[in-house]
Image (cartoon, rainbow, N blue to C red; front, side):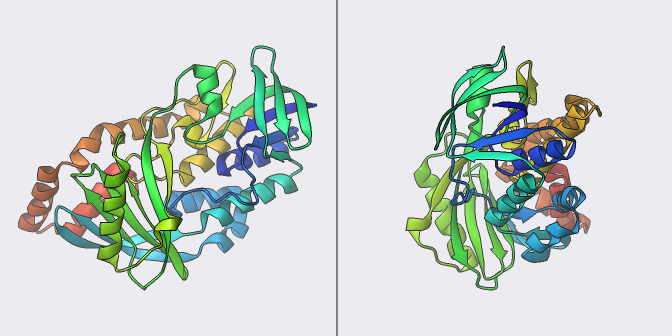
Length: 348
């Protein structure tokens, strides 16, 4: 088989990039190890304003049907305080619905898909690959290669010889009990917990620093569940690795990386949906003759590096307490200070 673009990974970033390339008249084959009919990526499913804007810019008004619940406020817990932050514009969705939507749009654009498929041989110099598909072995020749195979990207390891840096995450589905969107920053954990309602359901999750023991993550998740007053079935608890937000790589001579495979995620919130969409769009534009991919992504890359460098301040207990005390003394108020922190550390 001969294709213009071979995309390894058919999640959101891969499917979005593939659709945009198909719309340019290129022939795209996307492959994925998973059974995509059953795949349900671990993801809180919270959309920031920039993610909502990017989603609608790429997919149009159809994307609005994915939005399950809108939020204009959030409970933020830090340094022993609970701060109610208003004036937000956030929404939640079911990640499985988003991924299926993006994959359907890729297929509707004429893209080719082979899931339950592994790359068993890759000759990047001569642009050839051998795929192990459910129907048997499939040799493929390609012009361009794109890695979209997640935070532990096999393709990135293969092409660079280095494993992307990641942090551990746990998540479990829950029934919504009417409690507001909640985020808790934990100095001891050096991470954060969340409760994100989504219609009549939702999820509770936790991210920790690199090397955090699983038992510590489970303990933090249980504490968060108690705080928001929801129960969960431990049998449904799932774990995953997500990008650390500082190990960024967009391209090598043999190919490109998008989304999690490029290491793109907000260090303080884990936001990845926006970066999956934006990197896919920037790469597709570059391939079409637009602005060079790395140049188009440069402002976001700089932003992520700065936010990662500031991360120790976010999880410093004394800084947390001192900042909130300053907000009270000066009359600025804790909610405005937390809003400022979100703009500084998470860009929303």
